[in-house]
Length: 258
Ligand code: BV8
Image (cartoon, rainbow, N blue to C red; front, side, top):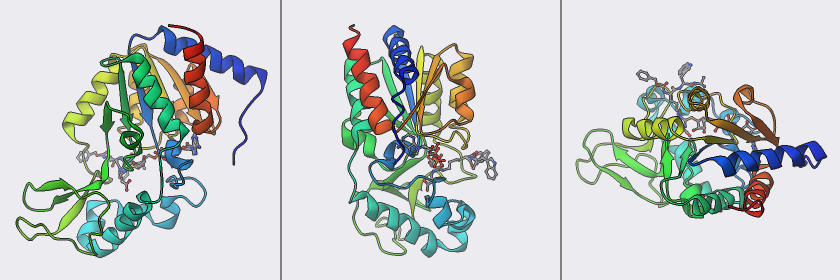
């Protein structure tokens, strides 16, 4: 486990970050796999992460699905099954409290994660850039539906037209859902504070939201175990596990009034 940074300078940075949140009329949050790590879900690039288990080219691309749909469904069914064993962690719950404190219209949570843990924790304004493991869609007709965590089998077929179903996930080389992407851009372009949590800031266009926030003069706070390319754009970088840092950050915001 990564130790929390309890140095006086870390506490000062946390206090400054709480001040940036307090001064913001609107807040946007961008999360990545790191916020779900303390729930027990492996990250993509961490030691033992998902990508290490499977080569990207083998599972998360439309070419892979065309080449070997059974393998891709085995990979996603494994991840769907894992969702049945995990719960939101204190980091997810801290973001729910932050949304409740700011109120409707002043908070947008943008996630790269497909695990659904933000909504499970109670977050309401959630933009899922890369889809959701619980949803599937047909490869031929418009059918798309939430199948929860039910067993789907190795090559699930559409009840409407009989064609192969696919996970409702944005794969590499695929466009993000236009409406979701536009809403994310609007939220980041109009916020005064952007909180970036648990992402290696490697994957585009999602990672580009950090620079966009900067360009629109938002203050940027990063929460991560280590520095990332997003750190170059951050006003404050809080190093430590998000499940510990986020509750302290929201507590500092609350104890500072307003
Ligand atoms: C597009 C769904 C354009 C899948 C995902 C070469 C070839 C192909 C494409 C590209 C290429 N070069 C660039 C591209 C574009 C590509 C891309 O960005 N590739 C990267 C790898 C370079 N992007 C795309 O393909 C996108 N589409 O560009 O389309 C286009 C244009 C025209 C026409 C058609 C298309 C689509 C990208 C979406 C891919 N799908 N997810 C699935 O989940 O199975 S992305 C995948 O990576 C996940 O969603 C994940 O969220 C995301 C990013 O990873 P992170 O979330 O950041 O996770 P990671 O493990 O990397 O980092 C975890 C971080 O947490 C670390 O920093 C760690 O320190 C920290 N951490 C760990 N524990 C904690 C913690 N922090 C705090 N507390 C802790 N406890």
